[in-house]
Length: 269
Image 1 (cartoon, one colour):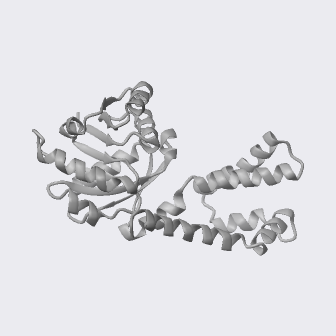
Image 2: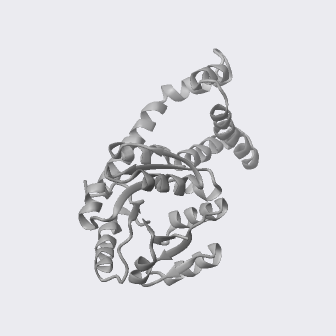
Image 3: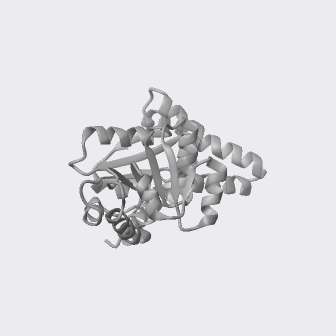
């Protein structure tokens, strides 16, 4: 049984562990973090092995997942580089970075061959088995290793492979925060219009989630469904027209653009 080592015990590690357990992973799971409290919680909730010592964690690893933010990535890479130089076993063959904005070139400079690098951006929704993960690979990665990465993230949701140059735009777009933000905003407006909070949330969740699920599972185009829902002169048509007139499309574009700038700034680009 191959060992999957997470370096970092934060929220995305917790979500991935939940998804892996739900999907019945065949990996032996190990988590390293400098915070003993995080490790105790993860061990208790997900029955994983934990390791405070980075060197011992690396020595066990078949696949390493770098599950830290971009601001912590360089320090972690340096520590791992030092660890593998003194390791009793060969360095891991495959490493996956979850750090938004940190390019493959920078990763390979610090921790070079024989390590093969992939970048992945998994959604926190993976904890429920409904995740979506974008992956991208260094060109030299063998087909078998690419499949291994696909299968890893496919254990808790859909996987799409995209060019690295598109990963920031994907990261900004696929965040569940869009849905939660829209749900909170629409439900708040519904309450202002007179609905109680529970009913406002039920109605808003249906508007945002159930309609999209129907689109994903059906054979109708988004354009045709939008036309069906927004009958000319009807209530939905008046609502959507007023939103657009108030700058709805412009505001969303502004938000996506701001997210792209932050992704590049966080990675020092």
